[in-house]
Image (cartoon, rainbow, N blue to C red; front, side):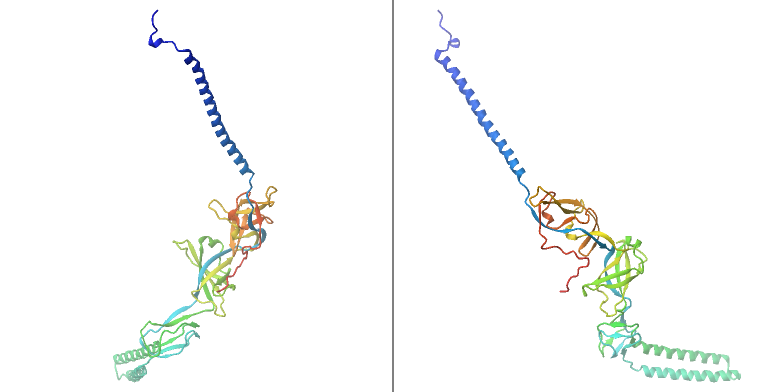
Length: 394
C-alpha cells in the first residue's frame, strides 16, 4: 500500500458532518438580515404613506377677511393732474431811475387800483430845472415868432427863421424830457391787484431796477398743469375743471379751460394747459399747489371697488371673490380672479371686467388668501370707499 499524499488526504467524518451546519447558519442569517431590512424599509414607506394621508385629511384654517358687495355706481371719467396757481398779471415793481425814497403810499398786503401812486423818489432840484427849461423854450418861441414876422417883411433871412424853429423844437424836447424824468421818479400801480411785502423804507437809496414789492392780480386766477399728449383728443377750451388745494380742504374751486399750449414738450411728451378760476374772496394765491380734475363725457354706471381690494401684480391685477363652498368649515372660500381696471376716483377704482354687480369681494386681509382658502367674514372695520375723500387740515 502506498501512503496518501498530502493534497489528496481524505477528510475525516467529523469535518464532513460540520459542513452542512455552517451553510445552514449562513442561509438563516441572510434570511434574517433580509427580513430586518425589509421591515425597516417597509415601515418607512408605511410611515410616509400614513403621513401623506394625514396631511391630505387636514384642511386650511379659515382666514378672517373683510368684504364688500360689488355694485354699480355712476362713475365720471376724468383727467387728473397736479399743477400750480399763477397770477394772470404779476409784476415786480421797481423804479426806472435811481434816487432817495421820499414817500411811500402803500402798505404791505394792500389792495391797490390801476394808476394808484405807490412811491415817490426825492425830486431834488427837478422843479427848478423844469422851470429853467420852460423859460428857455418860451424865449425861443418868442424869438421864433418875431423872426417869422420879420421874415415875412423880408427883414431877416430864411436861415434865421429855420435856426429859431430848431432852437424852439430843441427847447420843447428838453422840457418833455425833464417831465418824463420827474415822472419816472414816481411808481404807479400798472394794474389792479394786491401788493406784497414792502421791500423799501423812506430815506433809503433805491438803485434803478430794484424791486420795491410784487403786485399780483388775484381775481381771476389761473392754474397751469400738464397732461399726456393723448389728452389732446379730449381736452378743449371751455371744459369745466375742479381744483382743490391743501389750504382749503373739502372746497372744490370751479373753473374752465382757457388755453392749451401750442406744442408738446419733447422731453416729457406732455401738453401744458391753463384754466381760469374765479377767486372773489382771494382764497387762492399764486404759487399754491393744486389738484386738477377735468370731467370727460357723461357719467356711466360702472362697478367700483376700494383700491385696497386690488392686488397689483406684474402678470395682472386680481381680486378675491367669496364663493359658497360646502366643504369649507365656514361654508365660504376665496376665489382669485383677474380684473381689468378703469380710472380711479378718490378711494375707488372702476372695474371694467372680472367682477359683476352683487358679487362679494374681499377688501381687506387678502394677503393671506389663495384659491380655495376658507374665509371667515368680519366687517367691523372696512377701508374707506369715498369718491371724494377729504383730509383734515391738521
